[in-house]
Length: 290
Image (cartoon, rainbow, N blue to C red; front, side, top):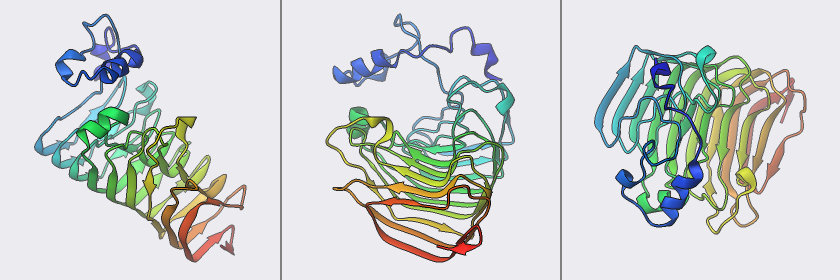
């Protein structure tokens, strides 16, 4: 229960932290909250630079920020974890693997006021300095009850994300997207070989939303996206199925869907801009094939 940290675990002075990064202060000991005269929220559980981690059978309550945030770790298992959305503040993602290699998230019930699983790999200049991808992740047999993405890549993905397989996810509540991939030309990075298999439920917005213009921030690092694969998946309600846009100078390299049945779709038109390698096999929207 993170509520005991509520007296200090608050604030959003991210500009101060980013000014330290811009000044080349790379030592984390010189970028500490609190004690600097600045405040910012802390993640809840954060294994750092660890090999072989098991987080199992716990329930998390009253989070102030991201809930489980393994960083620069290898061989991580999160199994049978429950999060409590009724006590969660804003930005309380369920599980946020950051620059990790080989991780399994299984048999969890994840809910919070943001993403269920948000995969990350560093942010902007600091992410390019560390430059470690998040890769080889499996998410299996989970219930998703957060209000943004069931599986989200980014927006902090400067070091890149690759080889993600999500299987048997039951999405409930007011979740906006099954797959949400977001970056911009300031953040850069890549999301490659991202796969959703047997994922279904209700979606407030799109089943898949991929954006390369997140928060309208710009720079000189176009993100590299794709391929993305959706299989054996469905909706009982959604505003739209695919809203996927690459950049004119950085097309999305592959979008495939097969054996999917999307029902209850309000807007049956799909947005597909600068997407190469589109392939739809046995995919229907409100009973009609794409």
